[in-house]
Length: 304
Image 1 (cartoon, rainbow, N blue to C red):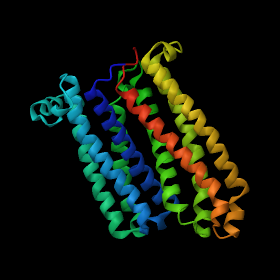
Image 2 (image 1 turned 120 degrees about the vertical axis):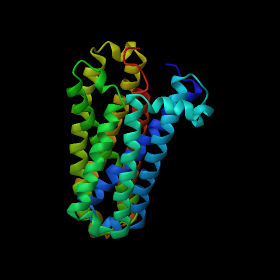
Image 3 (image 1 turned 135 degrees about the horizontal axis):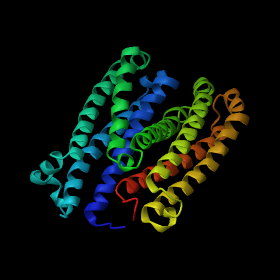
Image 4 (image 1 turned 45 degrees about the vertical axis):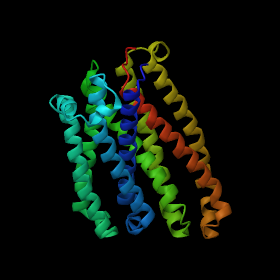
C-alpha cells in the first residue's frame, strides 16, 4: 500500500472526519433518544461540540489533501487554491462541498441544542432537523467510498449507510456513556440510561455485522482477496479488532445484567461501577481503531 506523506495526511483527515461524525451524530442520537437531560450537562455538550469541530476540520482538510495526493504534490499543496479548485470541479469534489454545507447545517442544529438544552432534545422540530442532517452526512459518506463502484451499487450503498449509522450509534453512544453518564455515577441516570444503551448497542452491532458482510462481499467479490490484497488484509484486521470488541462488550453486558442493580442501590459506588467503566473505555478505544481502519479502507483499492 502506497503511504506517501500526503496520503497519510489524507487518511488522517478522513479518520478525523469519521471520528467527528460518530461523536456528533452518535452523541446527539444518545441525547435525543436515551438521555435528554444530558443536553443540559457540560460534559455531554463538550462531546457533541468536539464531534462537530472534528467533522468540519476533517472534511475541509480532506479536500485539500485529496487534491495534493491526486496531483502528486506534497502536504504543503493543501493550501494551493488551484489544486483545491480542481477537486471542487469534479463530481467527487462537489460531494465534499455538499458535506461541508451539511456540517454548517449541523452547526445550526448544535446551536439550538446548546441554547435550549433538554427542551430542544425533546422537540419534534429539532429532532427532524437533526435527522435531516444525519441522513445527509451518512449518505455523503457512502458516496465518497467504494460502495458506488460495486456490481450492485444500490445494495452496497444501502449496506454502507446502515453500517456507518450503526458505528455512529455505537461509538458515539460509548463516548457519551463513558464521559457523560458514568463520570457522574448518579443512580437514577445509571438505572435509566445504561440498560437502554445496552439494547441500542446490541442492535447497532447486529446492523454493523450484517451490513458489513454485505458490503465486504460486494466490494471484494471473493474470500481469497481477504489475504491476497492490501485492502483485504486491512479489512481482516478490522474484523479481528471487531471480534475483540465483541468479547469486551460481553463483559460489559454481564455487568449490566448482574451488577447494575447493585450499583444503583449503592448510589453509584465508585468501586462497584469501576469495572464497567474500564470495560467501556477499552471498548471505546478499540472501536476508534476500527474507525481508523475504515479511513485506510476508503483510500485503498479493493483490487490491490
